[in-house]
Each structure stands twice: as structure tokens, then as C-alpha cells.
Length: 85
Image 1 (tube, rainbow, N blue to C red):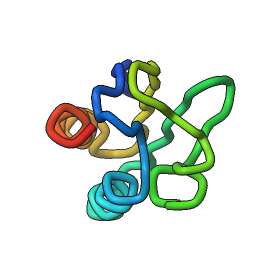
Image 2 (spheres, one colour):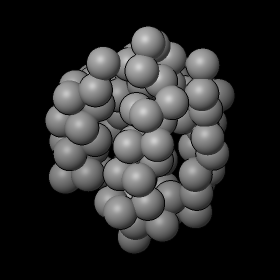
Image 3 (cartoon, rainbow, N blue to C red):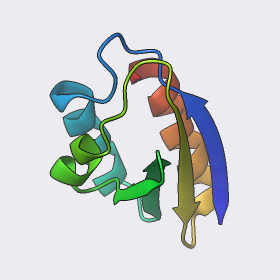
């Protein structure tokens, strides 16, 4: 399993638009991706679960990537976070 921490810089946090983009990006990868914040966790392919985390600007999330292609998928999803959140 690969993981990384990321501090959300988007003004509104993880809201509908970037959460939808994250779901689309996560579904395109072969690894399982879990986002953890505030003691809760959500499968990155589940839009309502991601929004249910209630992540605001300045909050730190931990992203865990596990699967056969986890190293490449972790790098790709980390790049997504930096560009979109």
C-alpha cells in the first residue's frame, strides 16, 4: 500500500465539482483508493461518501492506494490532488 498526505487548498474544500472529477479519476485506475479525513474514510469512487467527509480548505487528508499498480496509481492520484484540490 502507498499513501500520502495532502492539505486541501481549494477555497471550498472537497465539494461537488472536484469530488466528481476525483471519482472519475479514481475509477480510471486499477488500484483501490481511500481518502481519510477527520477520523472518517471514503472510497474515492463513491461521490456521496467523499462529500460526506466534509473536508474544508486547510484540512489534511490521507490518501491510501492499494493494488497491483499502486505506485503508478498513487503518483497519478497525487498529481490530481495537486492540480484540482
